[in-house]
Structures are given as C-alpha cells and as structure tokens.
Length: 324
Image (cartoon, rainbow, N blue to C red; front, side, top):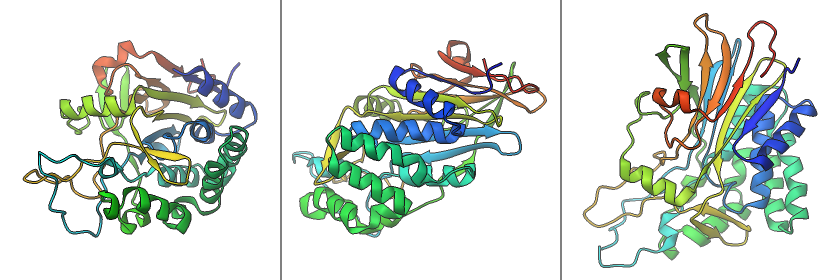
C-alpha cells in the first residue's frame, strides 16, 4: 500500500519530488524542495510567481500566495510614460513574494525549516555553474524573506529596476513581508467540495487581456501534486518564465510582469498581486475529508467545469491513507 506519492506535468520535477518523499520529507517540503531545485538551474524561477495549496486533517485548506506584486510602495505616482515613448524593461520588474510564501508554508508545516528545504538547491546551483545564484540561495536559507532587503539582493534590484534606470522598485517593496496564507474558497460540486485559489468562481475575476499577457510572459505552468504518510496533500504551481528582466550580479531574473505607469492610464496600485494562473485544486468528500488533489496545467484558470479534464490527480483513501 502506497501512502506517499506525487504527480506532475514535468518529468524532472516529478523525479525530484519522489526522491524527497522517499527521504521522509513532508508533502509541503517535497513541493517546495522541487521548486527550489528548479530555481537553482533556471534564472527566472526563484523570483517568479509561486502558489502552494496545502490540505490535511486538522489543518484545513491553506493557500500560500507567492504571486508577484506590483512595485512602487512608498513612492509618489510617477508622471508616467507617454504613448510615444519607449518603455524601459526595468519598469516591468515586479516584486517577488515566493520566498515569503515558502517561509510561511514551512512554519505552518512544522516539520522542517525553509533553510533545510533550500540547502540541496544550493549545491545544485554550484554544480550547474551559478556561484552567485548559490550565494543568493544561501542568504535566503539563513534569513528567509528578510534576505530581499539585505544589501546583496536589494542593491542588485535597485540597480536593475530602480528609478535611476526607469524602474519603480523601491526599498519599501523589498522590505514588505505581507500575509501570504489564507483559507481556500470551498465550492460545491457533485463529488464534494473543490477548494482552489484565484478562480473566477471563487471571486477572482480575470480580465482576458491579463490572462493572455501572463501566458506570454510566464509560459506554461508547472504543477506538482504531493501526498505524504501523515495525510497531508499539497499542490504547487510555478514557472520557467519566457520573458524576464535580468537582476544585475545575481545570475537571476524576474518575469516582466509589472505594469509600467503610463500617462493618462490608471495606475495599478503598489503591492497589488499580479495575475498568474494557479491551475490546481483539493477535493473534499461530503464528510469533509480531504481525498485528493488535481492539477489543470492546460486549463489556464481552475474552474469546476475543468474537473473532468484534470490531467494530474492524486487520490487518497481517507481511512487507510493509501495514495493512488
């Protein structure tokens, strides 16, 4: 009887997660461990959007929101670019919240710390020939989200995306550690209740133009589902972004997701979460037990109608905890 397992639309990510589960890692740690291992090799993953969905008996369903945020905290509204002006790439650098979301998720998990989850990725970054990226990961392992406001990372962001180069990143952006965890919405369907974040049915309307833009910038979503012997289910969604802006001196980049300030156009509020598809859900039985999770990496946005098309699924027997 199998009591732990994983499913993903990416073979490499699946292999990483299965190895971590075999080593006794929790579902949450295995999901985040795979995220950091991919981030060690791809420049745009670490500072890209990441959303984690976790469910377990006595835990409820929690969403850890690591979507990018619009920059500009603590700064007056710039005059904005004219329609005739070239918009610098620096103005499209958004604020990463993946580290904060990961730190909160591991505190909620309670079985290991963020540093322990990150450490294997440090070695992988070095082996892949990215010593500066490994140093960034080391700082994050030691300091958690506060690493973004320390000089190595914060100065690199300000050089690459601050006002002096046409960007709108501020020191306040890099100091923010907002609440990143909240309960998922529960929606009725024939099979029970599907709990999932950021869907239109859950009250997050999606502008079609934003959906198309996010798809062009981020590329295909990477979805990983994990289950551990303690009865915890986790789903994580992140990216190898297709369009990024390099952060000087870190061997890292940020997806070009921020919305530049344009003259005569309403400004996206600083600190606002920027749209990123999060195609995953947790299945709850009519009795309230968490009996599965699903991924919809081809569906764009999770919806109840997408249930039958779910390409990735993990099921769990609520009595024996067997995973299949």
